[in-house]
Amino acid sequence: PAAVPHTPQPSQPAAVARVVVQHAGAVRSVAFSPNGARLITGSDDGSARIWHAGTGELLLSFEHEAHICSVAINPDGARLATAGSDCTAHVWNTTTGAHLWGFYHSKPVNAVAWAADGVRLATASTDGTARIWDTTTGTLLVTMNHSSPVLAVAWTADGARLATGSADRTARIWNARSGAEVGSLLHARAVSAVAFSRDGSGLLTGCADASAHIWLTATGGELLRATVDGWLNEMTCVGFSPDGARLALGSLGAVQIRDAFTFQELLAFGAHGASAAKPVGLGPPAGQRASGAAKTTVWDNSTGVQRLSVRHKGGMLSFVNSVAFSPDGTRLATGGDDNVAVVWSLTGV
Image 1: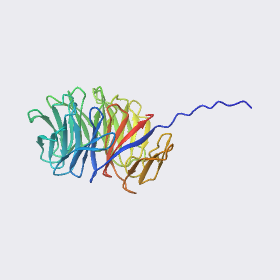
Image 2: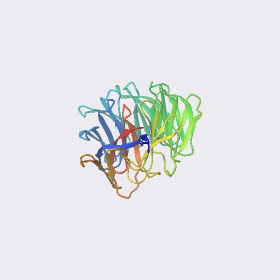
Image 3: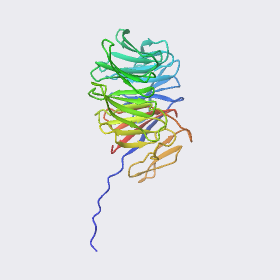
Image 4: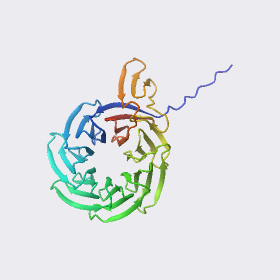
């Protein structure tokens, strides 16, 4: 009989844990440095830490007097902003660890974000305001008001507009210079996460009803919407890949990567703790195998050497609180209620 040529099947996309770093409390926020070499984490243990993103080596630690809710590094990587439940936001030198500025709200600060100019810092607070500060002078520049706690904040790439997400069920778009509101987008429940597309024409929002939306910022019209199958809890974090082509969505125990233009699911994996809506696990690529549920171990099949062991709270559900793409889009960092942050290698996505 004639030989039948074999057509290789395309490999399934996978997310493989490469680095795991540990805190003594839930990891609320993760970010990469502009060159992708460092990972920044903020935790309920009151510390923000800078790690080597390739090895997990601890490089520097910063302390608050309460939980750290958010971290953000400025565009040149020289300064770190942290937000805390102690009603403060702080700016630090990332080389020396020196404290540079402290900014104050009357209630916990839930989020911080840098403008592309590396000077203006936005803060979002439970006091119902978002504020923009000049970090060269310490001056308050603009205050924007919601009727309920402000949970999230994001800039356009040109620094001209700011988006906020609030427990008042709205995401709002503001002129970042004047503080004038230029758009309000109503949701079914609290808006817990916001992110602008690379060109600023779209705003991605994550909602407490387990849905994500992309809105056309020029008209306020909704372009795409997805309710994540099986996720019964809020969408805690969202993000665009650097090229704007993919989205990362985080919720209870899982992360999804979706196409930014169609919302088609490209990859789903149980990132922290319990199973995802779909039983997808880590799914290592060819040449590796994974074992365990509460403990996931990645091995090299050719040598039998253990490459990495990822431990989570066995049998407990934990939220993925934060997601961040690396600058080149090849890795994703996640931080969760299980006290760890993980750097995942994204293959085939």
